Image 1 (tube, rainbow, N blue to C red):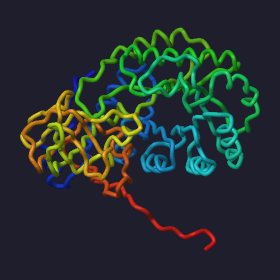
Image 2 (image 1 turned 30 degrees about the horizontal axis):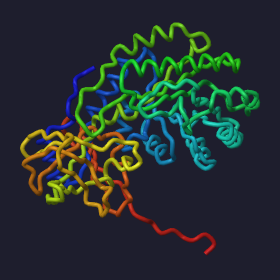
Image 3 (image 1 turned 45 degrees about the vertical axis):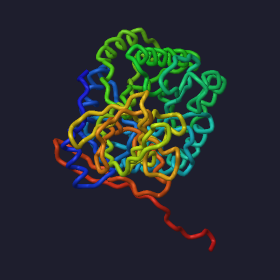
Image 4 (image 1 turned 90 degrees about the horizontal axis):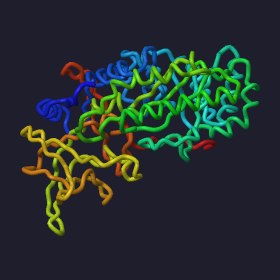
Length: 422
């Protein structure tokens, strides 16, 4: 595992802000490709890596991950359309999600998707109904399972009360439905994703170990031999702060010994998923100081031109930590936001919820200075309250080898449509 390296220098971020204005997201494709290479080295030989577009569906990032050998994992028509614009084979996409509508399943199949993660008997029945309209297309399914064993991952997606996957006992109770499938639909394996931001190598290995044990158990109880085992991911990366990544170089060797003890899943192809780990390190948000003003009880507010509409909107739901690190780009001084001080970093929104950081240390800040927030390439803009107060989206620039390769801006606002029957 390589030591942490910032995606950009302060001088580069200043240049981007001067050229494209603020606020602005900058993404470094070299960082993204480094993360993919690290995953490949860490995982067992021959494992497939699926890139979860939910972390950031920016087209240039997805194109780069596909070119680096990743397969798209998608859970919406919008994400599918991004993946379809790459050179990836849509038959190898994985379409996931606990609430797939009839319209999106049909759209996906019509556009070449052949692999689906199935979350319930209703989900399976809906897929089978639509698949029968395409008898010449072979549709493959993974059964997503919520294992009965809880392992305390970062943000739990399995092993606890979640909306994801079959409960083991419900899957076993309805197993006869698995032999009533249309001729062109088959179940090829299991999808077991314990959680995201799993904090240590030991915890990651534990999640994969329990996923394998669950698959082995279900294969026996369902009299089934899996050809695919998707063990999810959970590979962690810092969010909106700088810190050394955990070292999981030994994960591959540890998993190889666990995999050698398999029985019914011995020949199954291994899949792993990653969104945050692949994209987080490549992205930086650059924002400008609009105002600095005193407040009650010796507090002061630093008002930025970017807030929860551009970053960390999920923090209002308690699901994403608020950023607490920024870099003052104007003089290369590193200012870390820590507890027990009285600076409050806020955005421009007309809401008391618009706080990026509280209790922060940052000195020598002037109106017009630039701050940047690192490691926000994942769950940054697309996990924010972009529609709140109708501010324009920031520009997003994509860089490789220190050269800007693409510039985007997410469209927002309402489009008037015709009233049905009018």
